[in-house]
Every structure is written in structure tokens, then in C-alpha cells.
Image 1 (cartoon, rainbow, N blue to C red):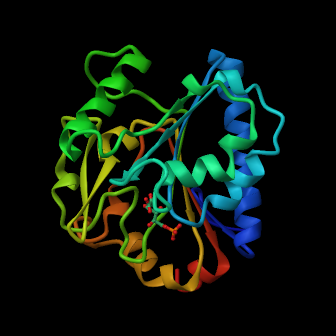
Image 2: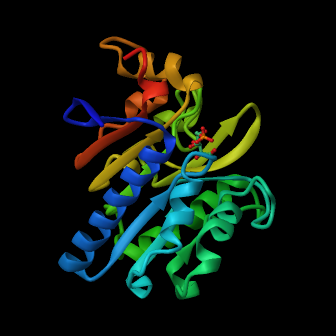
Length: 240
Ligand code: 6PG
């Protein structure tokens, strides 16, 4: 593993990246439970994190103290093959003994995207017992698209500017998404990006560039109050 700087680790390949992400997740779980007897995590969708979720399904953890959220969701039914909830349940949650009430999916196709986003926001405020401000997740896992998006914060979309909500409506080529907002992600104790593959090189170069338009490369907007860690495989990091 090479450390590019204090918050970038380059791993030999995707398997090593997933193994490192697993280690970090377990460490964060143990730290949070020791401190507050509870752990809250918001998951990334897409394909990169799936082997991490499969590995976590084999871990012996106090599942009753662990609460699962998603950083974004496609606007499809929960049993749709494109659903991030569906992917995580198949890879992980269906294989462990976790209380159903510890799983907090973003509701989709209930009413309309904006209403469902507000509904999830209300659920977050209820869970974290806050009236205003932004709750602090112990860990938020993120991926990065080839275009530099993260969660469902896509380039040049209105979601990037939303500062007064926890959850908003994303837009991917006209397809609605539900997504955490930038300020909610940036409130996290630890944010970990998992980025692998040659196809991510061009966007990574722009995300790490000294000067670049964050509206075009939204992953640049992720500057958490807590810790930020980029886990890259060698292929993705080759031009950094
Ligand atoms: C989603 C994700 C999205 C994903 C990136 C990277 O709903 O698809 O939240 O932000 O993390 O598109 O996806 P891959 O890991 O599949 O490259």
C-alpha cells in the first residue's frame, strides 16, 4: 500500500482495496460502539463496494447496535435489480441476524421523489433526535463515477447546491435519484471513498487537481469536518 498523502491510500488491486475498507469499517464500528454503544453507517451503491458488503456479512458483530442507511438510492422499487437497497440486502443484510428496525432504506416510488426525499429526511431527524442541523454519521462510504459524481450528486445538477436539507432529489440523465446532500455527508465522522479501475483515472485527476470546477466534479465538494480517506487501487491512481 502506498500513502499518497494523509488521506489517500493506494492499494495493489480491488481485492486489496476491499480488504482495507473492511479493516477500516470494523475499526470504526468498534470505536463507535465503545464510545456510544451504537454505530451508524451510510452505504454507497454501485458495484465497487459489493464485495465489501459480502465480507461484512461474514463478520461476527453486535448487529443490534449497528444501523444501516444509504447515501443515495435509485428511484426504483426496493426489489428492482438497480436498487442499492436490493444489492445490499442480497450481498449482506439477508445473511445476518440484524433487527429489521436497524435497516433504514430510502423509500422510493411511494409518492414522488421530492416527497420521498422529505420523508427520509424526517426519518433521519427522528432517528438522530434532531430538529435542525446535520446529524453525524460514524461512517459514510462513497463511490465515484467516471464523471466525478458521488452518491447521486451529479455534475451541474441542482442537488449540488442544496445546503438546507439532509436529503434531496438527484438527477442522473433525467432519471430521479434520492441522495444525501453535501452538508450531510460533510458532517460525518469519517468518509471513505472506494475507487477502483482505469476508467476512474480521468475524473480522479480532476477531483485531485489544485484548481477545478467542483460543479463539474462533485466529489471535490466532499470535505468532511471529520476524516476523509480515499482508497484507490493502483489502476485508478496511476495518473495522480
Ligand atoms: C450509485 C452510487 C454511485 C456509485 C458510483 C460508482 O447509486 O450508483 O451511489 O455514486 O458509487 O457511480 O459506482 P461503481 O462503484 O459501480 O463504479
